[in-house]
Structures are given as C-alpha cells and as structure tokens.
Image 1: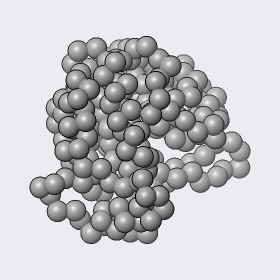
Image 2 (image 1 turned 180 degrees about the vertical axis):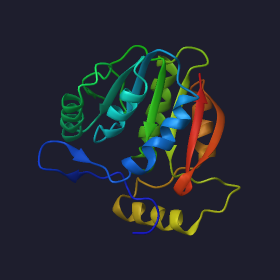
Image 3 (image 1 turned 90 degrees about the vertical axis):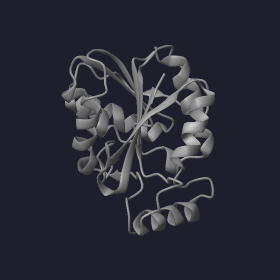
Image 4 (image 1 turned 120 degrees about the horizontal axis):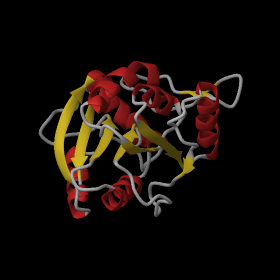
Length: 209
C-alpha cells in the first residue's frame, strides 16, 4: 500500500504489540511536543494503541505524568505490558476510554491524540473535541497528529491512495478535513492555534482551550 500505513498491530511473541510507524514518527512528534507541553502536569493520550508512544514520551518528559488510554482491551494489555517492561514511573496504567463516550477522567493539563481521526468514525473526533473542552484549563493544548485533507491544498497522490484504501476497509474511515475538525472544535470552545507540516505528508493540529 502506498502512502502512510494505517495504525495496525503487529503481533509479537508476547502480549506487547508493535506499530510499524511508531519508530519513524516518534522523535519528530516529540520535538513538536517539547515546544507545546507544560513543564509539569498530567498528559492524557487518547487512542494510545500499542503503548510504544506512551513509553517513549514518558521517558523524554519525566516531569509529566503520562496517562495512556484506548477503547480496545487488546491495546490496553499491550500498553500495560510495555509499561511493565519499561519501568517508567511517570506512566500510569492504561485507561479504558472510548472517544465517543463520556470520559472517566476529570482533568488534564494537555491531551495528545496520534493517528486516530482517520481510522475511526467521525463521531470519535467529535467526542474527542467535546471531552477535551471539558478537561483542559485555559490555553492548554490538544495535539492531534496524522494525515489530513485541506480544502485549499491538493491531496498528494500517496495520501489520496491511502484515503481510498481506508474507505474501502470501512466506509466511516478516511482522512478528515482540517477545516471540519476546526469547525467542530469551535462548537466545543476550542480554537485551532496552528497547523504544523510533518514528515511523510502528515500534519500536527494544535488546538487550545
């Protein structure tokens, strides 16, 4: 398949799972997060997947408490296995969290969401924005990373092919328009602060409360 690969699990010899894109994108994401995250506090990661990002960022930002989450029990087991093996004290056990539902957490100082919006129904993005608006204090950051559509920017062929392949797998999946996410965020009291170009035709969307 051309273009960015979907966030998939590759089975390992134990409960831990591996996402092939993680090692390729984690450092450039970390560089961006270093400019955005607070010096201390609680960071909620939504749709943590395998848990590899959570471990990596917990090590890089030891003054922050990292709360991984996912709606999939297999992912939760993988996250907790990575946590147990890494022994990072500032990473919490994985939380069961469905982006579309009300979240079992009352407060966070930042929220991170990597490679979720295009492999989930639109309702997950709407739920993400609605819940984040309740959790974050003023000026705090919601960081969303992945491939996106933009109405004034032609879609590169690799992302167009990726989008088509996602929609073939699930009619509710596909690359979201930045403008649609920004409009939905505005309804929830969030505003799009900046859009950052990332490698491999990905973007980082920075929202603030």
